[in-house]
Length: 593
Image (cartoon, rainbow, N blue to C red):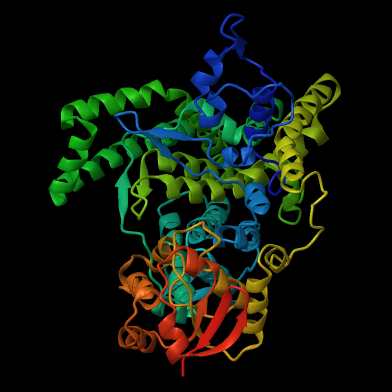
């Protein structure tokens, strides 16, 4: 429920906005104004509501706004879009990107970590004289899962590796106490596990490329507290109440000294690290940094002062994250309860603080993933933290939703009387707010479950209705011998481009250039493909076109409505020199001999 269906508070805000809540209408000018929505600052929601007022949101693509809650501004107050997807948004969008497909395997990695933490795969492996307390089966299965995460969605190797290795370290600490030997345990498992996980999937790495180009500091984009709560409120409420219950209700022992020192120290370390990265960048790429500061209209002292003041002005987000990080660390590093059962070695489930410790490990990792993009981000083609927030928040949602669900279940089972009633009301309100998004967005996307063209998962049905000639051509190519197909190239998110390869499964010369660059690490592998494709379609010189067709080993030249509308097509050369193997209406497919 919390992982797959519960969503952020975006839909609740959409309902309040659509109903005119917190808006004031001037009786003279008949215009709306609102201090609240202006302060909230979420693009479309900052605009006055449509009339007549009603509760159901109707704005075009209103459900998209929930995946763009965070609002970043540079020091000149220019807005920058930030992606903050969550699982149900991905399902609603039909987004089959790796971060979605890898969810079950991320859960598998969490299960592996839990099994290790509970003492599974007992055994011993001798590593050049050092002893690793895990059997071969557990070691190789862990490597298989970890390597699979890197193969499926490279970002997820972070969460998988940290959980599996730290679960082992905390198991050893629970059995033998904390000492420098735990650092030895960390490397004894982590290094060989990482190496074997790579070897298991070695063929993948031979062709692997990435757009990642190091780490950059985030000095001027802290997350506002209100935006943080809009994004995470449905998980933060059950998590914070669970932490409060552990502290006051169960009186679970907590190491508050470690919690505060590690929590505050971690934030300070991140802040110093971010500025250290900035200083290093100033000396390594001085021209870039100088131009960047000039673009912000500031020198270094002014930039430092203004960005620090901005971070303090957005302190609500940081305080919220510390309110979760500090107690999670305090409970994580508390000693296991030795008074819960007479036979604790056999009934580990009856040792509450041992179980709490693993839940706190999940929570600590989840909140660190939320905190990290406030101080640093991965250097990629986007140039700012848009993609790092996207991927880190998505991973954080997976682990934090498990903690929220666990905490809610514990409190609903253990609270009594007034407190049980109060908590039931609270969690009911949270679920209501969190389930508004899937309920209303599904109604919007499905036309209230009355699709005008009937139910179908095959989008070719739509093409048959809208462009029967193209649908017939696609069906013909599906049965034709395999070969590279040439189709016109255009920008991303335009369904007119890349559609032939998409619906036939045939390889084309180039798909969406922007996405190809992301997948392959840069635009370099594309070379001159985009320009060459345009030349093939537009040149009247057959020899020029022929050489390019041979260069890319093209078998089928596709000429449809897109090629006719988006380019000054010169089709005569195809008619004269190639064989038309399909023709219907405005679509012709030529075969290259």
